[in-house]
Length: 260
Image 1: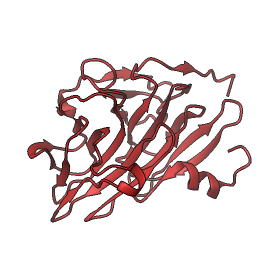
Image 2: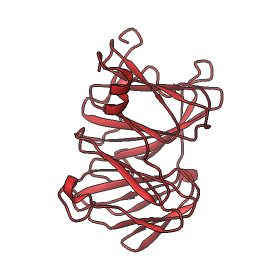
Image 3: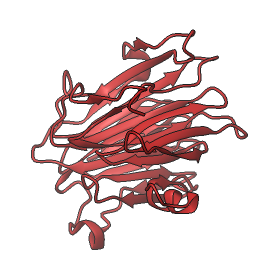
């Protein structure tokens, strides 16, 4: 990473192009075996692909669990035939062994799947009903609200954690000072940016950070050895998702500004 050109960084750590109408796209990363994807049903219905050649299974969730968040307008997800209506930023957890499909003319579904050693039931996660945690301050340009959907408590999962953080208007930073998750990979998907806005996302080891310039609905993979923090040119939100050795949300290692 320290000697990579900007194009190399984008090739290895940025996940663009997930959201195309009528299609399902995804990236498989060997970092904790996460699958990061997007489904935009349009006028039809889309099935969650098995990607048998990559995952070695006949059904995507045969040995995995899934987190879904709708980054578009209202739509629904079918889990073994049961319909879950999702508005903007509503989430859904789906346990191992289920069959999943997506529908909604104006919906855009972001999903992350991870290997699972146990099976848990599907749970709808209404954004408006999740009590946010206030973080940061306007004075430090880091005021934001953290919505914990699956985070190792309340909702049972095998390994997966995910949720949404909404940056307050007038603030720019999403995580500063940053931290490391030595026992898990984390992925950020940046959403709700205006067309001309960007987030400058910092990654790399403390003392040797680099950055990516990230647009709306683009994701960044942060391996366990990499910090993850960003500053935006306008208002935005981001979806965070993690999987690894455990699902304890507070299992992290702070990095001071001096270390950066």
